[in-house]
Length: 428
Image: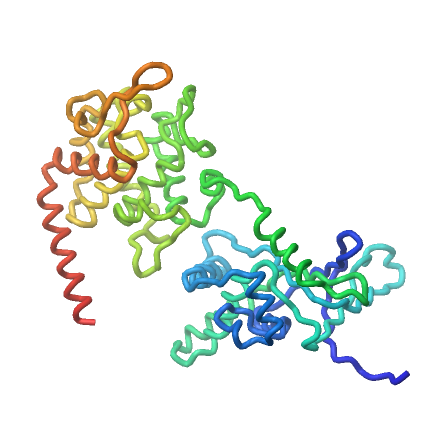
């Protein structure tokens, strides 16, 4: 039999397996080696340039990655993998399937016993017949490849290229390679489809409340947690981190999810209160940044503290009947904070809080009669808002402005901002 060299790449790995069909190999891949390891560019915009069989597999197995998703992943890497990151960051393992059986040579170390069991060298065959297919983590793979390309772009400054190249050299991507045990039975498309479905659709997402309570990287969640520790919140019952709403026996003032609505609206305006909780703004677009985080929390505490001072502890912490402690109420408070500070340039936020505290915030008060109605419940009747969340927040926001006497000035300022935006757009 003719003996020839087979072109393979040695990869340090640890072997495992599932059942009688699959072997697994856990390894690490540097960002610059990712495309070479796969043997192709798996980004969805390049699928039509792939080998027809490989293109068909990706189109049947994978979802295209949107431009927004790519930007989010790149931003995550650039913010969270640097030495200056405010919170640690990492990616879960990428999952890559190899259609054909792979040769593996375990390490043999004298006296090592079982310390190196399963560790060895995986010989990755590079032929087109042995396609490597991304089953899970395609968006992460695509984002990393985009950054590798970006690091060589001439339109970047030398400083920008150096920083990006340093970042790319500072992390590796964990990867698990799935291959068939049987040398004579390659993985079939139906089996690849099954693995894709298992990895992508049989996972159970955690709740938004749990995600926020454990998140230290979202600057608005972090600002909310710091605000929750201030005297104005802590002394009136504190913030409930794990529940989506206050239970009948709860003594807390607010749940994390509602206080986040206040923070996001206070920092970036009413529109940002509507965005999904995990959506960040571009650095050049946002008002709140890491350097100004504590100062923002301090100003927000003074605003709410002014209300609490004027209302007294019982009225301010009336979670059962008060308008301001509902979800729309917290969002409206944040929006008005932003309107006064960012749009109108007011710096008398403590005084504004005190003046708002002079309102009768009970749902039964005549001031709220146009946005509150009595509705039937299982136990009788209760007062509830007439409209949905957005509509109610806007109604509360306007009534707060009217009480402060700032509604007309606010509307004029918004009109001037709109005109300026139209002029800028026309100039472009």
